[in-house]
Image 1: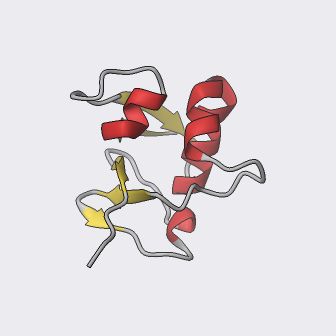
Image 2: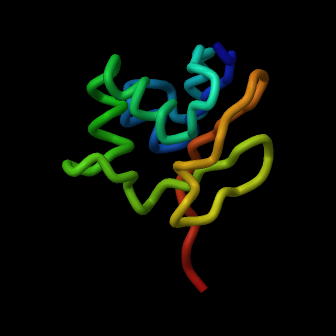
Length: 99
């Protein structure tokens, strides 16, 4: 098992029932070889509000969410397939767009 931290910020945390000014930090244990997608699906199985906020009805990640792994923004389309290792930190942030 790998111990990883999941942090959720901004409106995502608020929609999950947490304080908008803080974060939703949780420590999670995932199997060796697990991906970012595996982690998010694991949390979604336990937390309906998280699932409804982070995933669309077909279990794809909402397009207005950015994923950061150990300080690096992950790019689409393979970001959910990024492998996790012990001690990693995954952050979900509101996506920024505009010009």
